[in-house]
Amino acid sequence: MTGKELLEILERRILVFDGATGTSLQTQNLSPDDFGGESLVGCNEYLNISRPQAPEKVHRGFLDVGVDVIETNSFGGASIVLAEYGLADKSYEINRRSAEIARKAADEYSTPERRRFVAGSIGPTTKLPSLGHIEFDDMRESYKIQVKGLVDGGVDLLIIETCQDLLQTKAALAAIHEFFEETGKEVAVIVSITIETMGTMLMGTEISAALTTIEPYDIVTVFGMNCATGPKEMEENVRYLCENSPKPVFVMPNAGLPENIGGQACYHLTPDEIEFWMNRFVTEFGVSIIGGCCGTTPEHISRLVKVASNVKPKRREVSYIPSVSSIYSSVALHLDPPPVIVGERCNANGSKKFKELLLVEDYDGMVQLAKEQMKEGAHILDLCVAYVGRDEVRDMREVMKRFNTQVALPLMIDSTEFQVIEEALKRYAGKAIINSINLEDGEERMKRILPLCKKYGAAVIALTIDESGMAKTREKKFEVARRIRDLAVNKYGMREEDLIFDTLTFTLGSGDEEFRKAGIETIEAIKLIKNAFPRAYSLLGVSNASFGLNVHARHVLNSVFLYYAIESGLDLAIVNSQKIMPLYKIDERGREISRQLIFDERKFEVAEN
Ligand code: THG
Image (cartoon, rainbow, N blue to C red; front, side, top):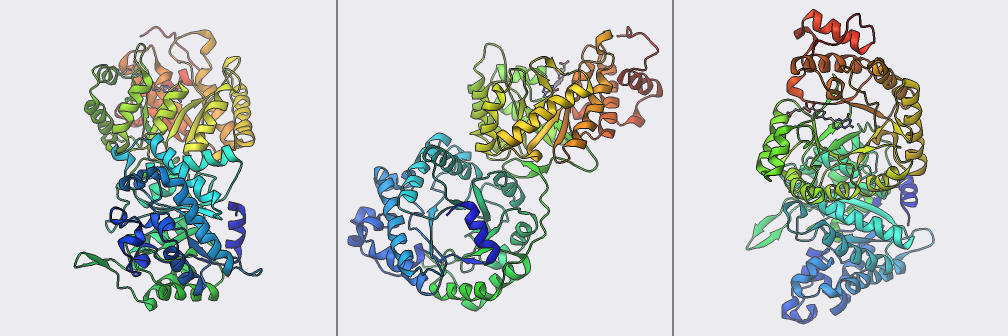
């Protein structure tokens, strides 16, 4: 089943997933013999090989009460989990068997009028890549084997569930992305995160950050949450998703909060209670897929079947605000009042301090500089570790490892090197911005970078530069922007809202005749672009405008330039936020000279450096 087919079904009706696999297997009182030996007790996934009747019985229990979708017994089927039982090399076989067992049961219960589906279960493993427990590439490769086994075994869709760390989710998505590309196969994908009782994911991720990070992935059809708590504790987050997620919403709670009784997790939610909450989520909020996680039995799930058969899918009014995100929280790409401030100082070319910290590899110092900018009002940080003679890939790896969890602001990855950008994306749990693409070498750069945006779910900055160099007039800037926009959207599948145009300015203080109109052309180009592409965003590296002037004059000119750029519709500005002044704090003369420089109305010679 493709994503499109799943969406068509969800237009017509609510789908019901099954209930707990793990806790249902427990009630079968399986012996060490069933598990294939003492050393394998607790490895539920090996039952697919040693005692396939056990998972089959769980499937039948749920199919009997009328579920639409059963999940394969493969939650811990990634090789990195199976390795704990010495079964790493059995991952493909175990996953394939899990899918075949579920497939056979689902097919037996299917009728021409009502198909029963199989979802390949992909759990979070036991490792958190954001904490350095495992490398992204190793995790992706492990997931790829699991995905291949599940799809070869005949699943209709894949569910990446119980996600704790968005970097883990992104590794699983990269595995699926590669698998689809390499095989030409495609099935629908659901991503389901786990919000702990403290109100965030285990890594501290807010629900808005998770939505922002997963939302750009075309391969993900449905987004939602499962595990950790009962439905009652999920209420506010379910409401949030239903109000904000452009993708249909999935909810699969536990049978209440677990209570520890004699070392066993016990779940107490009654069938009446789960029916009450799930009915509410579907009818009031507009949830599309319901099911049960830990502790839910066929009795609970039969009530969900009843709920689904009684209601039609609700049309949701969704207001998704395009955003970017760190591992913790998201930031909209347009703020009121504008601009979104992008701190410029974590840049080895743009800050003496950051450069020096990089040279002595003082990573804590770099994190400190990032935090300082946050305190000074930055919303996003530009990060550039390019320095002649140093290994930029290695530097990016070391810095990103720390910034991913130690910096709460979303990051902009500023590099000209393709490998550096991919290295950064593999270390970043949130939704990043890639800085930048252009048409300097024709499509070459877009061809390399935009597929990375798609694979890792990033937004991108597009500079108005083409084969003939940096565009100077507003018309030329607009023409380059249009060319990039059309290619990015039509050829590379980018969404307009993930494009941020930078109409670049030459320095205004050079006194050079050729650049007298640089300021006004840059500012006017913003209007043309925003007018033609209303869902795209605009950005400027404001400090570029004042290169060559003395420090005070720079601060004045940058501030005035930013003011007029915002008036023309600028959304984001790379600045040193500490040094930007509101206009009323600038003396009349400074304001007027700056205005004349920007709009080419100068009645003076620029010599007062
Ligand atoms: N567009 C996009 N990205 C960009 C730029 C742009 N990235 C880099 C740059 N331009 C924006 N960042 C800076 C950072 C610092 C300075 C200028 C632009 C700067 N630094 C002081 C200097 O060089 O004199 C040094 C300050 C210090 O050492 O603390 O001016 O346009 N997309």
